[in-house]
Structure formats: C-alpha cells, structure tokens
Length: 272
Ligand SMILES: NC(=O)c1ccc[n+]([C@@H]2O[C@H](COP(=O)([O-])OP(=O)(O)OC[C@H]3O[C@@H](n4cnc5c(N)ncnc54)[C@H](OP(=O)(O)O)[C@@H]3O)[C@@H](O)[C@H]2O)c1
Image (cartoon, rainbow, N blue to C red):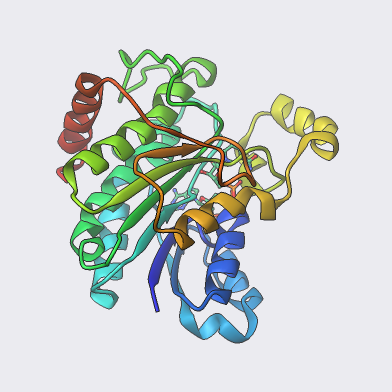
C-alpha cells in the first residue's frame, strides 16, 4: 500500500484524485485550509475513508508549511507520491505574514518548501514522485523572472507566468538533484471548482458564460494526476498540457542558470 500526500486534497481536482487513488487501495493524507471541507471530503470517500486522514493548515506561510510537514512526518516515514493541487486565484494586492503575494506563496513556494521538508520520507519510497498542478503554461513559454519573488505591486496578467513556471523549474531541479525521484507538472485545464471564489468579478462573469461550453469535468482534470501516480515508466521531468490525455506530454527543458537562481532564491526564503 502506497502513502500519497495531496496538498489541496480537500477540494476540487485534488479531492477527485484522492477519491480515485483511495479506490486503488492507497493510503491518503489530504491537506487543506478548511476543516469543514476536510471532513466533508473524508465523508465522501465512503467505506475506504479509513485509509485517509485530513490535516488542516495554512500553507501560505513558512510556519504553516513547517507545521504541516512536521505533522505528516510524525505519522508517515515513507511517502510515495506528493501531489500539489493547492492554489488561489487572487489578483488583489495582498501579502502573507512573510511579506509575499499569496499567489506566489501558495501556487509556487509552498510546493517547493513542503517538498523539500518531505524529501527524507520520499526517498524511502521505491519510486518517489512529486506532481504539481498549474494552469496551462508550457515549459517553452517565455517569462520575465526579474520581479521574482517579491512581485512588488502584483499584477496577475504580468506576474502569473513566472510563478507558474517556477513549478517547472522546480521539477527540473528535483530531477537533477534527487536521484530516483520523478517530478512533473500538470495543467488543470478549466474546471468549475472553488478556485474562482477569490477571483475578480470579471473572471467570475467570464466563467459563468463560458463555463458550460468550455469547462472540463473534474474527473478529466484529475485524470493525468491519477495516471502519473499509477505509472512508474515516465521519464522525469515532464509536463502534461492536455487534461485527460496522459500520453500527450512534453519533456521539461529549461535554462539551468535560471533554474539555479530560482532555487537559490527559494532556499533563501524558506531555509529549506
Ligand atoms: N479549476 C480551474 O479551472 C483551474 C485553472 C487553472 C489552474 N488550476 C489549479 O488547479 C489546482 C486545483 O485547483 P481546483 O480547481 O481544484 O480549486 P480548489 O477546489 O479551490 O482547490 C484548491 C485547493 O487549495 C487549497 N488551498 C488554497 N489556499 C491554501 C492555503 N493557504 N493553505 C492550504 N491550502 C490552501 C484549498 O483548500 P481550502 O479549500 O480548504 O481553502 C483547496 O484544497 C490549483 O493549483 C489551481 O491553481 C485550476
């Protein structure tokens, strides 16, 4: 029985992936902010819920990530797969207790930090795997990292790409520096979930109009997460760009100097 940790597993796409991976016979730890949603997720798992546990925590701060990692490591020595489906969609100019924009803190830095802290348990698994969900952004896309990591006066349209591509760089870094560990990035597509709750009105309005025509199902969005967890034959680091199409993937090939600079910055911020 494998132990799988899903950060963001109490909601949306992460919760759907948790449901299927539990049915496969795995042991699941799901993380999220909202304890009510955690309890509801466990209740929805039915007869197999005994193999799942929920940890409530705020992963937008360094201390929140450290606390979550400590609680996971207290209970689990060996983690096969760590899946990051945490995310916020906020364009507002706000800052976490660490002075970072929440979009950066949750959608990139929490993934780096939590993975780094769980590496000892991941390395005890036969084929440790780290999967990070983002919006559609191919590894070949250009991004300006000059404002990374502080993003003074956060501008979503300008700053989202370097945050999202940080995940690709981290997957490349893990592949290079952690022998035996497989890492990948998965596009969520467009799905009706709680992700829109903090979005501005015009995004909500667009989703309302276009959603019924354009949105994927939550099952389709979770498909590549589930298949990448089940399969141990793919070559790390990979990017899955098409929801529901596991065979359609691209190698992540990036400039190693940029990767190293982003990793140095992430280590300086978190100490991990
Ligand atoms: N749905 C889409 O169309 C879409 C599009 C592009 C990218 N994505 C990405 O796909 C992934 C899955 O999102 P989803 O659509 O399933 O949305 P969702 O239902 O809102 O799930 C997001 C998850 O992140 C957790 N989270 C947010 N902030 C957190 C924090 N500070 N600390 C701990 N957990 C936190 C949420 O926990 P709580 O619910 O307890 O707050 C929830 O479990 C995310 O990375 C998202 O950015 C989704």
